[in-house]
Length: 318
Image (tube, rainbow, N blue to C red; front, side):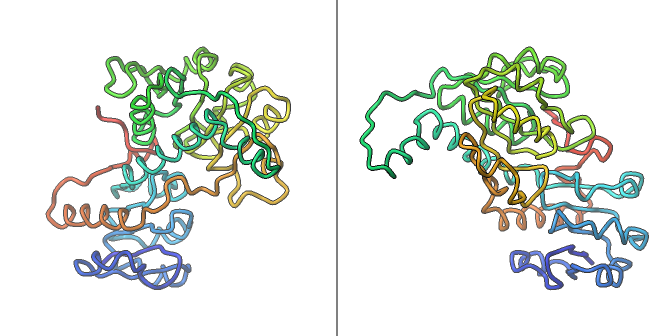
């Protein structure tokens, strides 16, 4: 039986195909999960923001596999699960291309001065001018996992120059050329026209990008974040934007979500706020991915997207 930690006590409609191959029971409350978890072999965290599994984990005596329907597992991961023999998988790959499309959209909006044109249109002002091209622009992608790789491939295809940053150096990388270690981040920041954060949230990445890093960027550079909000010192980012240290930011993730109404990011003229939707349009793909892994589980085959629970993400195996 699969215990589905969902948004309601009903099985999500997108999991109909899964329900044909396994008994699914959904829970959105502690009492409901406590009642079904002792019988479950698999826990499917459909609502990745829920903390219910942690609260009821002592009852998960038969659970050998936990799947998170998200790329980031920082929310559902907790010490008891880390120390247990249960395998954890995630939804790596599902969000990569949509998030790369969102990133390309934002870079194009900046280079082609879309936001400026909208303002001119509102004032009925015909403002012909020369705008930029993507070819030759430089993008530093901080986070060289699946999402970062799809972003790199798309930007290279558009003629941009790309570099990547990850935990360790990789030579002859198929998408980045050379991936530089995070220790080189500060040296690479002045090179980039666009700095794109595509990081998982781990103890090592929390607050990785702070005021010192923004100071090292060009004052014409833009910062984009599609990873996790807490990988950035949000107060430092706000200060950097207010002071003109960097030219602007396009943000899909934030330290607190939903973004509080009194947060200065809402009103800064050089900021684009996106409500954590860069990877949207994904539920059918999430369900299909889980069904594929479910069949592997039933057949005793190796699961896809196994998370290193101590690192907090699926390690790159290139």
